[in-house]
Image 1 (tube, helix red, strand yellow):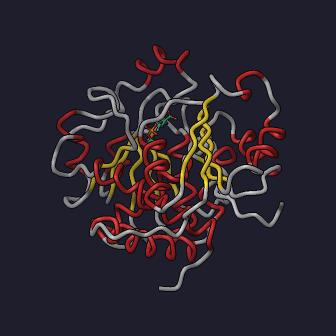
Image 2 (cartoon, protein in one colour):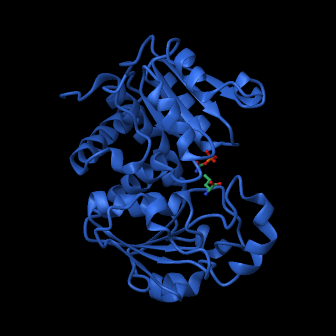
Length: 307
Ligand code: CP
Ligand code: NVA
């Protein structure tokens, strides 16, 4: 089982693999836009397991698998045996005998690692408390599409040091760019939890304006992630000064883009003016989830395609 390739966190792939995947994404997206049928995964089945809510991740994986000629099955905690205490190791044994590839959205990263250790088929992280690697693949693809190579660029992360932030930090190490992070006191990045090598690709700033200054990309996310709802009230108070607004975008580079993985809360982590404004690329970012994940599934199931 150890020879099966999984995508559990961003650093599971090398820079060279991402270069290949972004190239494939471009081609796969072109075929889709031209209504060209491309069914390399005919007869393959994706199982999607959701222990948390989702719109984009479910849609993009399910539509993506169908567009590649395969089929997708949706399971959630509420109406499967996972919610009734079946060990994740047993679920992995069974599910991976009946499918070709699995995607999981769950709580602790440990759950996904235990599943992977017992899976006969590739496993994709569709978000855990710690990481959201498919999101950052889509975000970086979007940046490249809009602005060219990301190497050497500066990304400003404003707000919570959550799963999406941790993944940006891993990506910076793998793809050689910089992240300027500003969180409220008490919510700083934990390098170990983020799974960093410590290559000096990020810097923390007390003042969010200083983190945004000169950035090529400004991004944020909800103040309260799924699974942390009990802290919501306290977080609303603690994060009040960490909103990405027009003043903050003004100190970034003039050609800077704004990104948000969505869903967004206008008036909290981002002002309506910014997310609905000309620098925002959030809809392209969401769409690109579809295209990068098609390239990812193709790669995990078929390896490299030479075209
Ligand atoms: N960005 C993202 O993963 O969205 P969903 O929670 O809707 O899947
Ligand atoms: N950080 C958010 C991302 C949602 C896509 C969460 O985990 O809820």
